[in-house]
Image: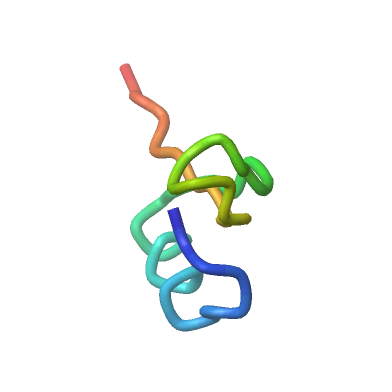
Length: 42
């Protein structure tokens, strides 16, 4: 989860191989957060 506009943190997530899946509001009191996931391989 990354705050929108936090480009540095989003870049780190992407470098770690995470995929951006959109914005979620169902965590942290309805705050809009960019959501990244790391998919299992194998």
